Image (cartoon, rainbow, N blue to C red; front, side):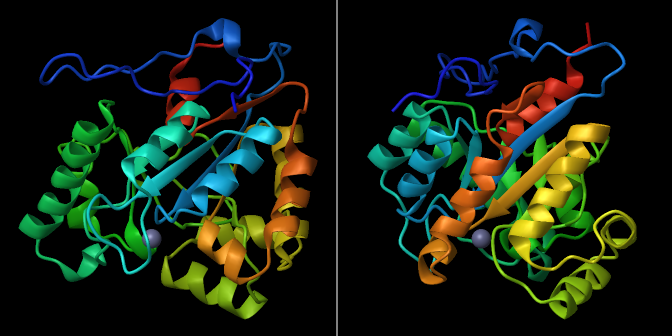
Length: 283
Ligand SMILES: [Zn+2]
């Protein structure tokens, strides 16, 4: 299944010679026509852990013309991982493959040389297997520290996605790419605890001021998307396909996709596409 070309996606160019890592550029012609005074509105999604249910999820995203980045451990995870042919199927649906380390460890428990190995080897393994550059990374369990953050760019990544929630701004630190909300039910107390643990005061302020401390995820997603429509920025939905399956959340996820899809003036991009779009001068 092909996603129509109106989508911005930054699937990487094939790696044709050693060390040559180039990225497809977003041409400004692919950005939706907007008035000069209207801020850029982006939608991106990301999905962690490389479970074979990602194929079902990618088909769902493609149906709604919403782009996604799938973060995959390159060697080991306690859950099943997709085969190379399945990763290629995702790429064929215009989705992006990102690294989720080599063995899905909690990076904050590792010494810097082990963090470096996880970052570097996972990127190189995925690039070798897929023949594509892999410039996007996601921290396992959302855990990162200063040591990990500082190694992101030297290890060859342009972004590292976190689980820092309730955020829609485009001017984020690339080594700490925030998200808006997870496609999973969470109580208000859990959301609060998570945000406090991450020191996410900006997110807490957004959640309280703009989104009424909404905790039901589909309602929160709609409120956050509506704000991006009005104010610009990026709406970033994330989750796990295995969690959609285990929690019976497929139809709730589809409801959210239906709501955010095919809106005029909104660009639907991969995580890598967010970096491309924000670097693109506005016309
Ligand atoms: Zn994970």
